[in-house]
Structure formats: C-alpha cells, structure tokens
Image 1 (cartoon, rainbow, N blue to C red):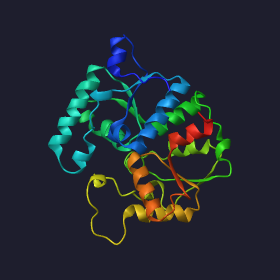
Image 2: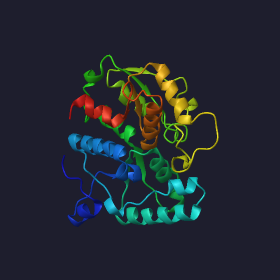
Image 3: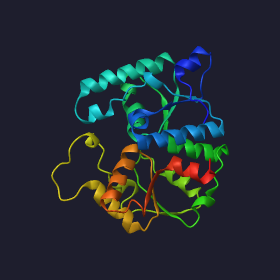
Length: 260
C-alpha cells in the first residue's frame, strides 16, 4: 500500500489533500478497526483520491466523555481538535466512525469547528455514482447479506440509503433485519456504554441483536461502525456462530469484491 501522508507532511511540501481522513480512536488503536482503516485508505489510493490524516495531532473527538456526562473533558478535547483542523484550513473530511461523524458534524460547529464531513459509506456511494469506484459484485453472488444500522449514522443522522446502495452494488441478496432503519436496534455500545460495565438485565443487547441476525439466515452481517463490529462479533462468539456468520465493514466488502 502507498504511504499515507499526514497533514503536517503535506503542508510542509506545499500540498493540500482533497479530503482529510479522520481515523478516530478505534480506527487507530483497536486491531479489528485498524483493518477497516486500512481498507478505506486502500480504496482511496486505488481510486486516486488525494487524502491525508492528522496522525499524532488527532485526539479523541470527546464523544465518549460527553455521553458519559463529562462536559469539561469533551470541550477540552474538542477545542484542541478544532484548533488543529482550523490551523490546516481543513474543509472536507471523511470518517469510518459514526460517533466521530456525529460529533464533528453536529457538535463542533457550536465551538467554532465547521467542516464538511461525510461518513465513509456516503463517500463510497459518491465514488460509485461518479464512476471512480468500480465494483465487481460477483464475489458475493449467491451470498445473503444483512445490514445492521448503527444508531449514530441511522436514527441520529437519518442516513439509511448510502450504505444499502453500496451493498446493492455487490450483487448479493440484501436481507433486512426484523428491526431496521428507524426501528433499528442498538448494538449495545452507544452512549459511552462501550466503556462501562453492563447494567442489570435478562439479556445483553448485542445478544438480542445477533439473534435477529441469525434468524435472518444471512451469511454476512455488514456494519459501518467500529463499536457495532465489536459488539456483533462478541455476540456471534457468545452464540458460537462466529464460524457461520461473518461481520464486515462495508469498506471491507468492497475490497473483497475487487480482490485488491
């Protein structure tokens, strides 16, 4: 894979990327989410989109802190990020994390951070529609794929179409879950739940969700969020179905379809 440049490196060379890839904490440090980061970077390289990352200058967006009620930490980290982004005069951004997407899109403007940020599934749809990204859907012919709506892309930001249109380009059989789109079920990690112990209850939310995936008869469950991928994977392990149903980010499906 080609070398991914940082904004600092591009600026020093007098260059300006088309788009800044906001990697996020999960995409930087979680081994499973790193594979999604690599998939997106590979796609952008393959289609010729000039991009850069912030690298060590990128901090957590502050989303988990705000959801957990620590407004001070949220504003401190958010203002730090905004200062860096504004210093580089960043305009357009893409991220693979719906939590980062929501925070930067809807919450940073109040603090002076105004950016055109898209979720990676929206960018993939844009690239397919423009003809820049060609998809060989034959790799998934005969496969049954179901799609899990992440809360922060779906119900919070009302984006249901882009991920489904990208999946539709794969020539697979897209099967909707019993609860989808506006009635979709959370994976159980939202609202900073990813970082705290379970609350008392009869069943973990991710187990209930994965039971719906199993009932759909799907071979693959597609997701668009690193938290969802973790929770769905854990649910499959708990049900001993990890060898029967695969969990992939939509960008990974594109990579597989093109055999890159």
